[in-house]
View (cartoon, one colour):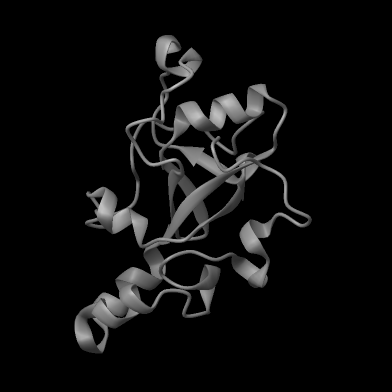
Amino acid sequence: MIFRAIADTRPYPDHGFVSSRQWSRVAPRQVRLAELTTTKSTLDLASLLSEDSTFYGDLFAHVVYWQGAYYLEDGLHRAVRAALRGRGSLHARVLNLDELEASRSGAGAGAGAVAGGGSGGVPGGVLGGAPGGAPGGVPGGGGDAAS
């Protein structure tokens, strides 16, 4: 099995990150494919096989960490291409929704937590990081920035 699970919906609440500019503030890191639950269950074969499918978009997949699980929100084709190339991980922007929700409900409505990034705690802060401090939980690297 390539992914932890295959789903067709986003089980987590809306995080409000809709623009490329917002996602660009989330630092990319490596994520194991086996840790990901997809939020789409279908692929477009033409997109999967296209050489320039990321030309107009973010080079990194978008992943949401919520309640102990990693959800692949955008980048299913990149993830499958990485698996077809024998890679067990890919570079992704990981948004920690647990900490984002906590910072929004706390003092200051979370603006400082998002701008500051990497505040520690559960997976390395609102804007990425990994449990236990290891980058992406992938010892020794691997993956490909253009996956």
